[in-house]
Length: 432
Ligand SMILES: *Cc1c(COP(=O)(O)O)cnc(C)c1O
Image 1 (spheres, rainbow, N blue to C red):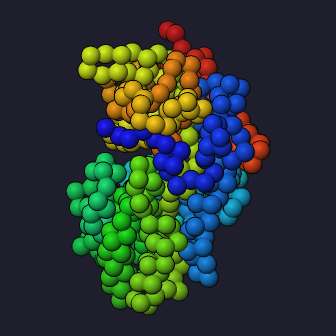
Image 2 (cartoon, helix red, strand yellow):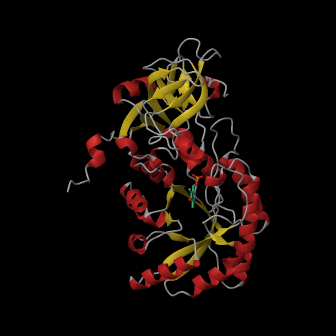
Image 3 (cartoon, rainbow, N blue to C red):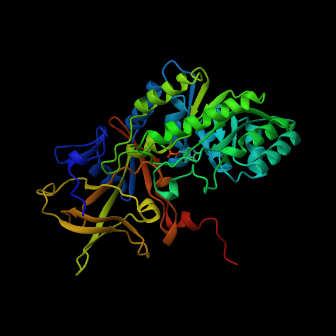
């Protein structure tokens, strides 16, 4: 059983905190937002996003570095706009993401395109808008990309994603740097793939990249991956193929429930020391953080619909579900759940133990298990650490419209996405 979440238990996030009996995002009361906009409702703190970004920026002070926000973590236009305005580039994984990030005002030259299954149409779209680099994941993809570029009379800048075969020590579904994963080119095949890339008429080799997994809370896997990647850089350059940039991917974890990932600046102090020691400190560095920039900048507000006591389990049925917050159902992920306006006594240990579940017709539709809470129907709860991989993974399952989203900036609360109506969910369909 998890101890009751107390105000002190909020993941290290100064911009989301209780003031008296009110949970606030910056200077805005969440109870007011729930009343005004309804629930489920995602609320993000702009200051929290910018302070997460600032930790990376501090880490890279004085270096040639480009931070490319991995937008699949949260791809809402206004979120992208915050990062674009702050000078970020973007890591995209589909033509849809590319169109979205350009609509948010991103500089295409700072956009990179990752993913194992790029289509010809996506390659063409990306070449025509002039993205900075393709992160290529297989030799077969090199051939197709070169063909598409030649047909457009263009050259595609490429980096090859190598698989360093290190264990990121995270959930298997979000571990990507091991041999059995679909991602990247195996270490032992990398030199051959680089020679192949250099020989193709439509390609210009510019970099190397890796991405070993997500929600990584230790420094060692990064240091190991860096060693493996730098070994390859040495071999590739000895073969006469210059590598201009080294991209270490994303993956840095956040504090969901007492997790203690390194701070971005502290992690990079160690990684840069290694780069310097191995003589690569002057290279252009790129990174692709997603979760660590947005995860703890957001909460999802949900109203308690019913309490359903039972012999084996007590259920707290809320109006958010697995279609809004898919991580528990998908990865058995943990999100802290706290009252927006705690009832007297609710921060002591006398609440009831509930499974917090949504209305969707699946037993897998749970948000939290065995949580001690003092709640009543009508109360609003905040699901914490909901800024990453929640709204961007949301679906319309059970014909549930997706939630609305708010971006808080100081005392201002901007509605950045309207709630989807039932009509919106079937607007593109046709009767026969
Ligand atoms: C998902 C992904 C990222 C971001 O991962 P986080 O864990 O959110 O930082 C970066 N690069 C690639 C290639 C990815 O697929």
